[in-house]
Length: 298
Image (tube, rainbow, N blue to C red; front, top):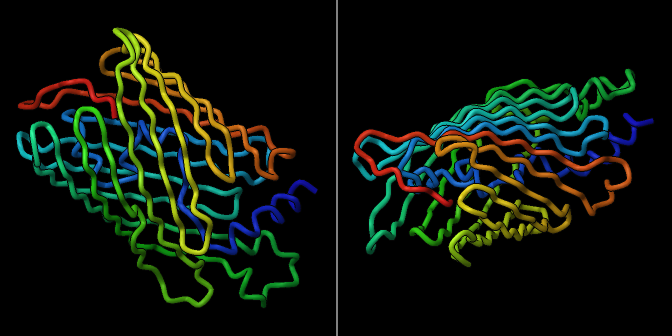
């Protein structure tokens, strides 16, 4: 019964095409949102993330990413690398590798505009025959897919020490096989931003906002508020339209290491059949020769 319920609930997901993963802690893992993000930080940053969505729900998605970005020597150029594994049950798996390049220009004192582009390959595998009844092998809906796909992303970011704003399409274009049964692809468009405000000697406030639009789907909005206590502990909450209320915590273990956790409490129709979503983040921030090493709040 659980398998049938999972399939029925995921049918709308398949109907609009395989969509890219969404993260609750996007404000601490900006490269997966915008390829221009690598221009913000003056350090080498390595972030590992594991997201487990709809815990207790059979066939629920889970996603793992490892991202790295760094400035290039003393130039205004930077690069990034993303490795991602996205899985839905035992039916759909996508493994992806992306390389991004970004260039920034200073438009006033400590205020920059950056342009980024990313490209890479993914291996998409969908074993739809596993959910057929054994008598539907002639139905093209249940044809398995196994192919390599090329991906291109674009991004633009404006930022200073106190704020950032960006517009991006991390999956602007996809190149894949010409099979008629191949899963349809939808472009993703994202606008996001944040602002840092000092509320006292040991307290900072950072609101963030993100809008995501996928062709054929309602626009999704994520409103977030984070507080930084004594330059060590981030505590925050987010509201995501059509989906969930999220609670976040990030702690600075050392000047070079930070760990984070978020819990998503859904307010959609899936609330009665799952136990929320969990997201774990581990990040390292290391100095780069020839660059300053200021604290980066974005």
